Image (cartoon, rainbow, N blue to C red; front, side, top):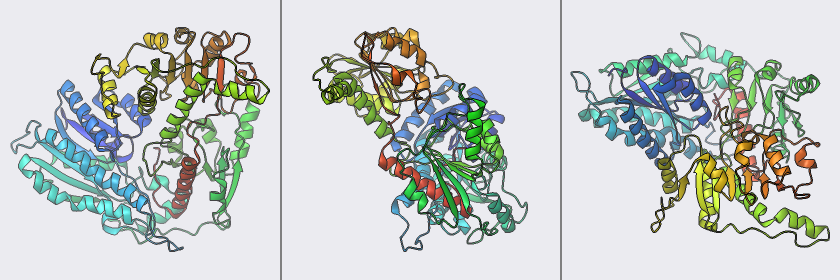
Length: 627
């Protein structure tokens, strides 16, 4: 199979080994459909490689999500005229854990399911759903080949280490199904090859301390180093191009056979210095304090210093932040509360591991971390992978809308200060909700407001089409249109129409260079005087001075805001000091970025940070690397 002129599907294609394969495919003249959960890294790769790739956000544990991507990929293939040539299911996770720990606790079933659902079920589901299209692709060469599947196993399939039972089981299954899958698909002219890599810089070694990396060299033969992603991609290209490679598992490990546990020098007798930043509720403290104090020295900083890269941050404050963080080897962060730009990272010579929450953090310069060899690991809700607090944010957004419409905060204050009723509430039934962005959160909020309150829904974003909006409605279990009137459930309109017709405008966009400041005075001035503006996404999506001016002039009924340009809000911020709702000003409801702040969510995130910290110390693969 030649790569040039054909399209290859690569899951996990936005990072690591998958990304290396994507780059190699494009270099060889092919197209790549990049499937990944991380929208930010996917967009960056698309920007790098241009029209030769198309990024599709997908959760491989969700059959419907895969089906949607299959449909979109085949539509793109039809547009480009480059037929499907192969599938490289490279998405995978590791969640090490002993079958029985020192306290006689067995390995949790949720941890096992988490690994198997992505590494095994996800691979099978992705492959099976693309197979009809692959079998129907034009035959190539004298052998009549229709396509190739290149799966990714691991050396753990053959000599897994302690704590790798789930991971080894998933990768062993991938290796074991290679030959029977090849036999199943041979009559369709489809080959199956599996590569089983050992230590590669894109995964395990990027997550290890220097001492662990040094220790690992003792277990290696030749070359005595970790493999490079480009070397994996080179073998994947050979698997695609060499038609005689079929039904085989190829080890890519430089003759390395790993011992039962990692061999490395004993850790220094001095405790590892760990800083936990910006945990306002103190949820992390009992978890980090439970660590062995002879091994870990943990400090907590609940006060958030002004961001290093904020234009108003003085050099003295920058130096103060550096002085605070410089002693620590490991830093735990909460979302984007403390950004880490390149200049700050360069001033932290002792930093070896950064732990964050969620599956992306726009406040981190990941390229700078990567250049320094500092691993960055996120955390997800294992019971609902990929949610990153989306249910919590949805509930908070709906609460903000209702509170603004019903004057809840103002009436509460009036009663407690000796007053009574203030102004009439506003009914939402039959009114129009305008959602700026129709992703997971936009759909969730729109569905609730439509079903529960009978609101009409209009939507806009720069790339939103009516076809996509219809798909979102159907996926949410809603009719695409009203059976009697034919009116769309989620009606796509222009930006101008949304702002001028909606009674409630709710923002649900991902912050990026393109979306930053995308809502400005010209948009806000279109809103009805009776309208409510809601933002639970990110403050910088809106030009803050423009919003302040519109509200100070009382041009709309109210605003409900959970996010701001600078967080926490300075004490002298206009949001704090202005007497909102008085002297003709709009009413303003403010909450301190609480959209994702639920105890169970935060507790789960910190549990995973502890797990990742202990894995890093042991030299084990971390969960959810962000690069």
